[in-house]
Image 1: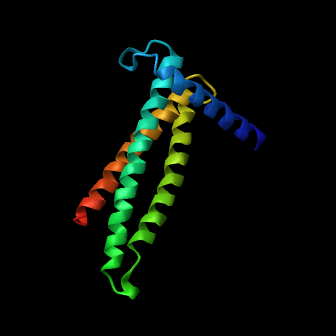
Image 2 (image 1 turned 90 degrees about the vertical axis):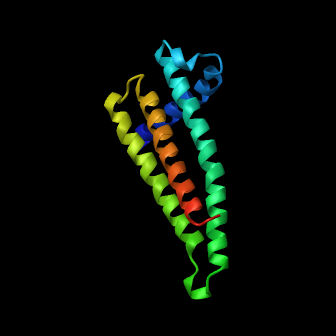
Length: 136
């Protein structure tokens, strides 16, 4: 357990230092592992911002659906919340697993951040389609 907490702490610290570093790096031409990791983390940070913005819109659409339903039919907002929590659990576990391709190496944080960015972009698209499907 201590090892897992230590590894997670190290990855978080790498990400934290990488965010500031990404501003100074040409991410289209990153040359070092540190630069590539920094850029992957910056990409995930942007994807996460987009996800959070879309989630708010989709949640509002689900609230609007619930508003128009009889009491015994409501539940769109709760279903979204349940799905989002399950997705976060899946995303985190999947990307942790993805990092095992370079477990303990300098590439691991980059692989994890890239996975997080990719899955977050996909989820944002799903939430947008869900929101648009409601006409909201």
